[in-house]
Length: 308
Image (cartoon, rainbow, N blue to C red; front, side):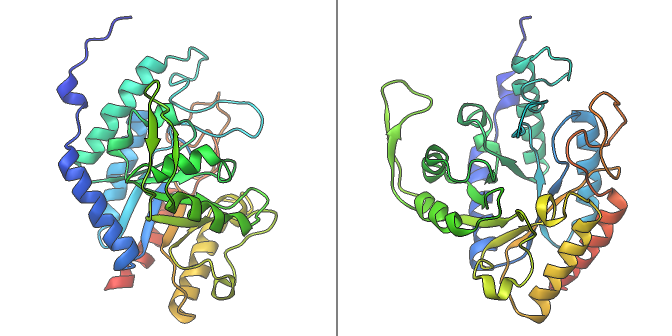
């Protein structure tokens, strides 16, 4: 079906976005203020998601926060790969629709002064949204990927790199060193063009656990500086209520052991838990389980008090 596109509606204020990313780099890497990255495990319903984002904005008044807009999902095996591939969750794979809808939504969020975080799985897809995104995660399944590292070295966005699924931390420093460095590689987007990068110095570790959690004893791990603690995944042992325990534990390490961390990542949505993709319960995750808005308010109240 032919879509009439209002191109002005799809353009972001690039100058202001560049200024905002520079401001965020100052906050994270120089002022070293705690940030919070939060939102549902995956984007599945635009209307419900935007309703939730507006509620988040009313409670995060004293902490710099980023909204998770995870439009594609890595799969260990097979399954729904995310909104961008199958927005109507009916195997119709209307990607022309999803790319247009996601970009419109991201621009709306930018104009609301909301920082956007996402995960980079597919370089071609993220190119549609790169000018709207402030923080990009390289996930546990791709953190050792050379082409992901090269791509991240070529962009100005803030990068977070997760430890491997196994929990091994040894490759994290290698990943950041590679992203910090200069590279040359064939362009993903322009035929017969070679890219020469300057390196991206604005990178963070993201500790997400592995076979066992890895948020404890951060004072002796030497990974705390500029680290984001992923309170979900293996750190929570896939139990969403444990995200609260993880955050409070690390907060106490920050407060009483003087560890340096950069912030926290939470999987949160309007309702607690998750559901089968076929159930279609409003504002309930269809991928990983999330904490609900009531629990989130408790956590945010704690973090809002850091700089009072």
